[in-house]
Image (cartoon, rainbow, N blue to C red):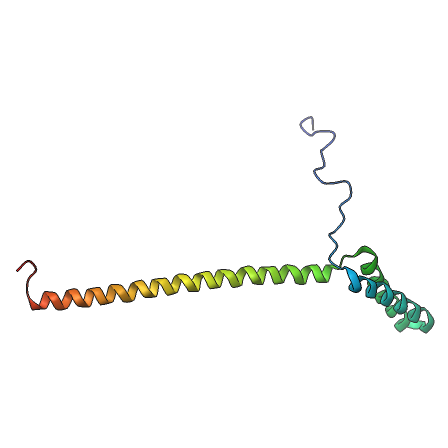
Length: 123
């Protein structure tokens, strides 16, 4: 128990805000759409009104914070796909180089084999 420090240092910023990935007209649309959906949900009432109110609140929060987790997830998967695509293209280029080298090696082997059949080297 004496080995455990009393206060552990926290290595993160005081405010950990997510990056804003919703800007411009998209953000304005989220604000307006969220307010409209919440208003319609309140007027409608019942279970469907409650669902509409919840969705409107989520859209409004997206517009206020400027961050959308779903959009961040899509952007992350898109960047991972781009990395995978570039790796595949690099592997294809390397495979093409290997094929060319193999074809040249086969041609050299055939030429050497034909020359060997005609007569010994050095004669």
